[in-house]
Amino acid sequence: MDKAIINTTKAPAPIGPYSQAVKAGGFLFLSGQVALIPGTSDLKNANITEETAQVMENLKALLEEAGMDFGHVVKTTIFLKEMSFFAEVNTEYGKYFDKDFPARETVAVKTLPKDVNVEISMIAIV
Figure 1 (spheres, rainbow, N blue to C red):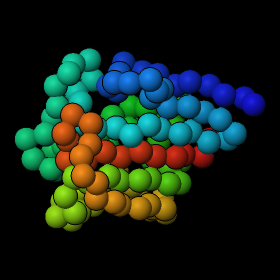
Figure 2 (cartoon, helix red, strand yellow; figure 1 turned 90 degrees about the vertical axis):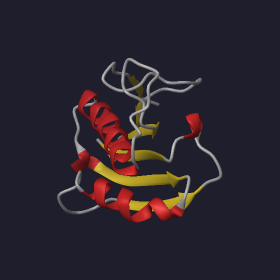
Figure 3 (cartoon, rainbow, N blue to C red; figure 1 turned 180 degrees about the horizontal axis):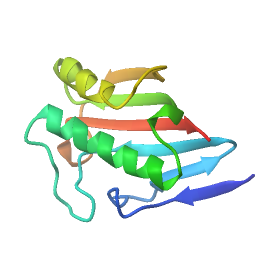
């Protein structure tokens, strides 16, 4: 199998035994991103809109490192600490796509890494 690990300093370093993204089988699998500011251990999370924007910027950096953009994304998963954040997260998330939105699910979970409010993972087609 042809597999390539994608890493960039423009997105947060992994906080566990995983890669930021992996290209394999014609797809790019992006690990879940939270609102960590790249190169720091600080979160950008004054409010849910700001937090979502940082998550999307982290994902954008990984896509760009792989020579891609949000137009290549075919599937996303959004994890929320509270489903009450859905509308605000959805609005901010939507700003990153022009048309032909990817398939998606949004689920509420009990806790997320670093006690954040939102985490998003993606799959893109190469």
